[in-house]
Structure formats: C-alpha cells, structure tokens
Image (cartoon, rainbow, N blue to C red; front, side, top):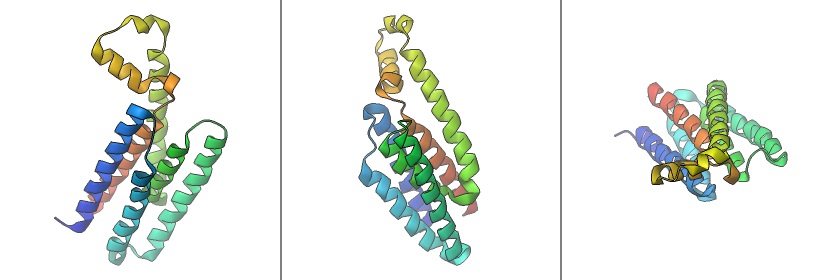
Amino acid sequence: MPVSVLLLLVVALILCSLAISDLQSRHLPNHRVFALGLLYLLYGLWAIPSTGWGAIGWHVVAGLLAFVVLFVLYVLGAMGGGDVKLGAAVYLWAGPAGAFPVTIIITWLGALLAVMGWLVDRPGLQRFTNRPWRCISNAVSAQRGVPYGLALAAGGLYVLWRHALLL
C-alpha cells in the first residue's frame, strides 16, 4: 500500500474518532487535531514531486485564514475552541481548491445538527424514553452545544476523498 494512501486512512480514522468524541463529550482532544496538521505536512512532503512547494504554502494559507475566521466566531460565542482548531486543520488539508465545497458541507451539516439539537430538546419529544432515542437525543442535544466537530470531520472526510481521487 502506498504511503500516501496509508496517511489518508490514518487521517480518516482520526477524523472519525474526533466526530465520535464530539458527539459523546463535546470535546476535541488537542493531540488528535495537532496530528491532523502534522500528517498534512507529511502528506504534502510526500507529494512534493507532483505538487511543488507552492501548493503546500497555499494550503497553509487556507488553514491560517480559516483559523482567523473561526476564531472570530469563537470570540462571538458561536463555536468552541476545539472547533476552531479542527476547522483550521480541515482547511489546511482542503487548501484553496477545496475550501468552497468544504465550507458548503460544513455549513449545511452544522445547520442540520443545530436544527436536530433544537428539535430533540423540545418538551414534547422528551416523552420518548427508549434507549436508542435517548442516545441520539443526548448526542445532538443543543443544550450541550452543537456537535460542530461532526460537521467539520465530514468536511475533512470529503477532502480526503478528493485527495484519494488524485492519487
């Protein structure tokens, strides 16, 4: 198996683990998010012969711009600090070419999660007490905060799919 494919698989597993962590505890462990950034740099270095150093630079610029925009949302109270870091890592992987479709995926899925969270918190739905419903409602409950890490991870998985198509 080529190293680039192995790196993409590892990143996909990390993204999935982050999505699960956010659904369960609304916490995105820093060491996993940091690993995403380091793995992009390894992936970029591995792909330099075909993409050139300039491509890596533009990906870094995309990640930094995403960090600034998401940090403003954090300051406004619209998202958590872990979401800001994960978003920057996802946009690092996306680069300028993938930024727009990733933004669409993250925005729509984030909005869907927010609406789902709002709906499961309605008093009329609290009467459902079966175990699967409690598990789902607890995972997406807006009272705990929107699990935006799930939307960010989905955007990241889309980016990995794009990278895999280019291999």
